[in-house]
Image (tube, rainbow, N blue to C red; front, top):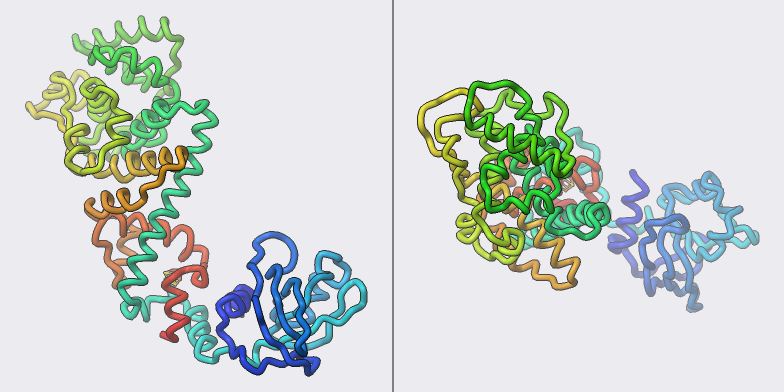
Length: 424
Ligand code: SF4
């Protein structure tokens, strides 16, 4: 049994609280269990208890065995002098504080809800990766819906922490953060980091100066990506190369190292060349891109802004210097959904948090309209009968996996809590 389980039992009151007696034979009545302390010091702070009708206010310390008090050196630590109750699973010895005063002990094993204990053992003594899988289909829809929404917001809060770091780095330049993040996700899973680096090497302030000149936008992106350093017998390539050399000099630009951009194992429609050309077109086509995406409230508006085709040269190319069959290289629905989920919604959330002007319901409404993502994590939950209906579910499951299941935090998870509470 983990000590965190005893914290959980105490906090949630999963023990018979009538007729409690300390192991020193005094009547005990709990008025307030105290506030869980996640820092150093006693486990629950500022509790209130009545011992033989005398009110005590102070802290509660919890251990599996009473002797852990000494194993942790609390008898010498003045931070524990204000402990008014020692809650233990097994009372194997009396304990004293640094003033040599005995601490009243409550032996929880006498009062613990046996059904909760049995369910806990079932939950934690299984070898299954997801120990709740036997009971997942018995969790009511209301609990699941609320939990998924909470997980989704938690995920956005985590992303906001990264954005806060970017705000410091960019001196509050939201346009730069948006541009850099949009570039990152335009790169797809293979070129995510490389594209993000392009966004740092080619600042938004420089890029946006050439907004009305599509070939120059392409020259800047391809040049900084390190894709214009060869000799090629291709007029468009040479034009971009010439433009880039001029702009590089003018703005003192650096480039990605050779091999920074990868083509390997990518479908031609996802080649970084096509992605960069589409990115250039998005900025070229839309005035006030950041503001427009920040204010959108429907998928249709996002489709209107983000559905673009790469410039004409790319109709017959996937790479420089190699002519292919004519095909317009348009960003598709999947791209729009990806950008909404990973760029627009997180940045909208962060911006609202920054301004103190929250509207989480609108964000929930928007993401619920987007289709479920497909990845290994989503499959894990689908296989235990927890299918994802939409992108809110998939974002929630990613958060659940990363911050709860992998870390065995079933006691902090609403699914684990429902299982323990209902003895499933
Ligand atoms: S954290 Fe929640 S969902 Fe994950 S295994 Fe534990 S109870 Fe199940």
